[in-house]
Length: 503
Ligand SMILES: Nc1ncnc2c1ncn2[C@@H]1O[C@H](COP(=O)(O)OP(=O)(O)OP(=O)(O)O)[C@@H](O)[C@H]1O
Image (cartoon, rainbow, N blue to C red; front, side, top):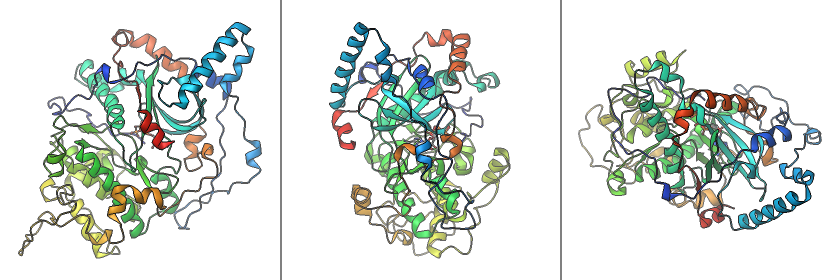
């Protein structure tokens, strides 16, 4: 889960791209919210979760044996009390006012376009945890819709352990972390693609930033990989095609994803792949669709960032890089799905880094089809200039060289590659395939609120842990910075039409 932050920003280099902090006028005013943690404590003294799985492995060797769900377990699940029940204890006048307020909000949510706050959502269970906070399954109290709420602790963003180690002034690092925080919110609010998670709302309170995302119930591809060991070539090709569509779409908008790994690939209820976590994505200033699709560099980036196993060598070497780094990561992910581990592994980041930078092109097992070997070989080239420029050759053939020099970059059409022979690109690119058919692995979902395709390591976590400590950290350490209101402009509400399209 952890993000690799080896010398996260090279102090000698500057990022050649736009700061993604957005203008205030772009967004709606956000209400402050604060009661949620109290509600949460009273509603959920303990996290509730079944410790059972319904998914079974098709690969007996790789999957650990897990107990099947007994139906009686459902009866034993704790029932959480909706926080609004508390209103019954209020004095009549307050009760009346609150009830009116509730009714007003309920009516406005039916129109779907209202700034949101933490009290609007009932926490159900933890779905995952990242570097700056948790992702929690929540239920909208007014509409009963489920969302994945990504919470980022302001304290973690404002004060990082690295600051004590790094030579750069704290303000430089802070700018970078804020830039990334805003980048995720800004980038996601501009995107609409069937294979990319949707952002519906964002807001913040005195402790945290909140991104209210579409809940993707099928869990991480990582989870299914653990269950199944490895996947068949056709299945892998299908996921590779869906990821490629999402990456191509992002590159066309001038965005480099930079964090492709199995944990960030989720499966939706129909088994289609959805990319999440845009915390490391970067958008360029010169966001011209034409030049990006020509395969020209979107922008030259320098930050060392990402998860090392899936990270392109040029990034790890501290060189400048462009969108092509995402295609190398796709090669690593495809390799992982087929072989059960990424191309370079090791006991720690240093060992992995050494292998990626010094070893030759990774060994591709003989048992893969020739087509798959060719595909992987073209993406896993360490030198960018020798790597397949997928954006350039997305749907066009490059010039045919009669005498192909050894080590030359592949110039054939990406979509026409042998491994994609069963993929209906037209339907996939238009989104029709994702709407009308199921993907190769259909996650078992008996009840969306159970989040049964997520690891019990997370779903059994206490929902409230750490909340009080964060408060103390903020007050003791970062008051001067906090007063600058650096998170102004974070709040966002998707347009009514966008919201209506998905609910
Ligand atoms: N929309 C979603 N629906 C369901 N689960 C989600 C969703 N978004 C995130 N998750 C779960 O939460 C986990 C962590 O989310 P995410 O990667 O966005 O957090 P992060 O803090 O950026 O993590 P990292 O530090 O690993 O980059 C994911 O791996 C996934 O399991």
